[in-house]
Length: 117
Image (cartoon, rainbow, N blue to C red; front, side, top):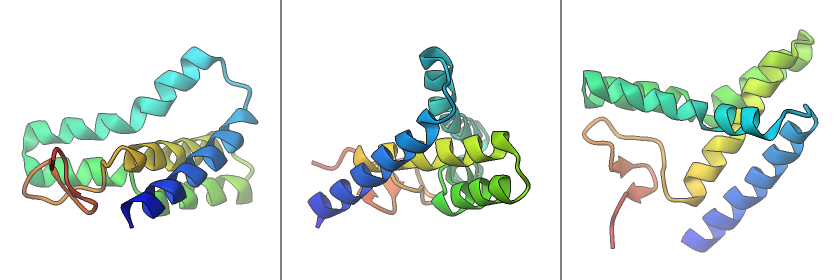
């Protein structure tokens, strides 16, 4: 099952890259924007409950799709790009096993424990 999930996330990651490619961003800017959702981890400085909330908001595919669709509806390219980046980044993280966080610790995710052997 883990392999199937990773393959599914790989497909979504590639799809997201195709969406982002249409913006013609310089690769350095794309790299910075691609990792911007990880700024949500800064919430852990205020504790695991707040950290899980801020991290999960910036890694939630529902939010990503909502931003993307809202951007399409109101013709706002920045929202479209933000949605595509969050979606693509979240798929990348899930390929690596980093899921949405539970409130008890950063390592406890909806995909299982990070670092589990």
